[in-house]
Image (cartoon, rainbow, N blue to C red; front, top):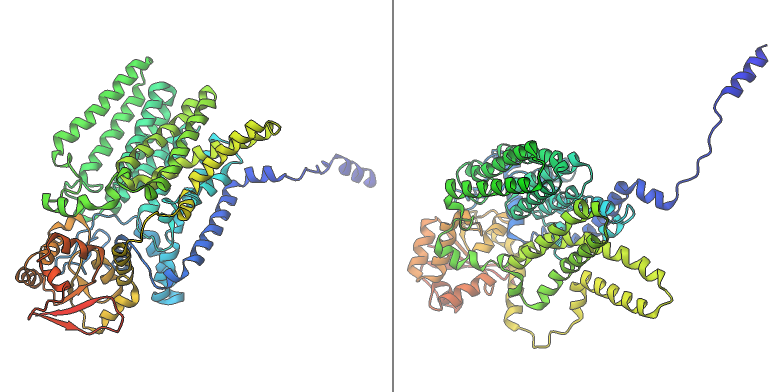
Length: 610
């Protein structure tokens, strides 16, 4: 009996099912997020290794990167969370910075985590090398999700490769590029992923939250955030079933904007300024969220009525903005006409792409243009539903990104990122099309030409390196570039530490780097909220020597630091050939300036101000 019972139990027990091992294609589809992060880790390690020399020498090449590190240092040394003034610039008042604390957090966390094991010296260098690589992982995931939904679940590796090939986008994620642009591009990748997300709630929440975070970081991507909201409104106009997506987007945008303002903006941004997420833009975000929420709840049956309501809502926001904040109808920086004429209008990244030479313009525009062609091609081939809910929004966003690039070249990094899905779609369709017609020489020729066009566009910046310039080398430009590079190096500026700590009067573009790598304070940096200090520097170097001395004494500067042939110095010499700096550059001496010795070969010139 016992034996029979055992046999019965054994027979009733489910037999093990032998499963077929997953194929490589199934693994690529199932574990795409893990594999994307693995690819990111490989790329990040390669970039970190290739930039090790720059990391070791704390080669923060941009003024904003230096100021970001100083902002984090101040926070870690006890400066209040909402006090974003840089007190080592323009002392004793400090320098008003229009940034937020969002981008400070990962950099500060890395330094805090590394410091007990490596000390401050290495903690700062490693953190500055690693921090910019973190948003690159987010950007890869966002683009991967987009092409998986629109092209193929297996197309995500091409999105990763496409991002790596973006000549203007990838540098924003390079080690030591610790400014906020990388994080804003990461939010842009999440925005485009949310626009084509078939899950209404998830897509709406993703677009709203990413837009809010981007606006809390800075207003550079404000036009992209506005366009994303307009695309979601158009989707609702076309199909009232999109009301749920619009509802979640409105709630996420409004709540995210409020959190971004209350949790991360500085005390100096609590006034009605136009250059950050101040009460001005918080009001606009809140009004947009409320109106879109009302529209989504109403959702009239007729498409014409929905369109009319959307237009009325947009006009109401524009009219309210013009009525309550007329000071923001011009440039958001709100600088004086003199400063706009002499400084802000000459910022290169704010100029349109057609004002650049073809050697700079072609590599920047090639990928967005080819991506736009690919998006048009994919939209035309898509079925009706995917055309209007998938590729349609991405196409509109890509068109907008390309148009923004022709308005301001600083939008080129975003335009290239938005062009990646279209490039992937073009490549994904091209390969099987050529393979199906492998016996037809014309198809092979056309396919090869198209492939060459795509490859040339993606690698345009590399290809143009081999194109001869067709002229003699510009000795003046070479001299300026050499001075720009040498005077910003750590060894050149560290030599200033042989003199007691004091306030140094120098070029505007040299100020942030000087306070980062020396113990001296500086008078000015290239930040529009401090226009008076910038004008003081300009007036000192272009005016007569007596005026320069008076301005330096007013700022309590006892040290004068200049870099001959630096780009900013050439502006002063050209603008005022008889001004103070032009005389100083020609070797003139002044009784109130005493030259101070520096190590042989140091590119700087230093004087004691008496």
